[in-house]
Length: 175
View 1 (cartoon, rainbow, N blue to C red):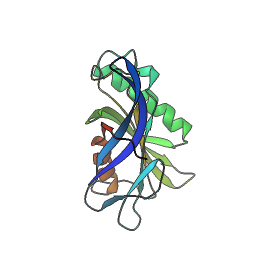
View 2: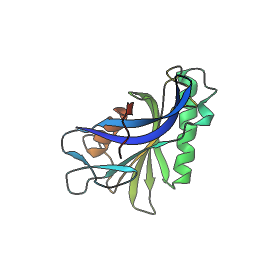
View 3: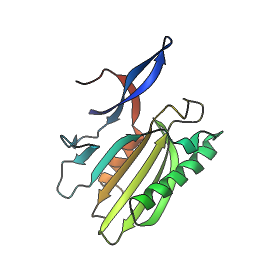
View 4: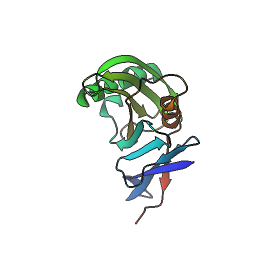
C-alpha cells in the first residue's frame, strides 16, 4: 500500500523559478496503515503493542555537499545520525550500520532509552553520490519507537523495509 508525504521545493524550469511539490512515496507491508492527521507522518502495524514509525523530509544536508563516493557518504550519514540521536535523546547506542535504499543511502542505529523505557531506531537518508545535487534534494529522517526490544520478525523489520522503500517523486500540489 503506497503512502505519500508532500513538500515543496523551488526548482528552475525553462528559466523561471517554479515551486515543484515533492512527495515521499513508501510501500507499506500488509497490516500497516498511516495514522490519519499526523504531521510528520506516522505509520503503525494494526496489532496491539505495535511501535510507531515517524517519517519526514528535512532540508538538504549541507555537510554532504563535499562527499565524493558512497563510503564518504556513509561516514557523513553516520555523523548526521549521531547528531540526530544526541538531539533527540535517543539513548545508548546498541548498533549502527549503513546501506543502500531506494532513496540512495541510509544510516540507521538502534538505541535503548532506559529513562523512557523505550527502544528507538533512527534513520537518516540521502541521495547517492552523483544521483542529484546534494544541495537541492531534501534529506529524510525517520524513527521507530517501541517499548519492546526489536527482534527478528517483529514490526521493526517491517519499519526497516518501509524506510528502505522511500522514494522522492514530483507531484501535484494538494489544496
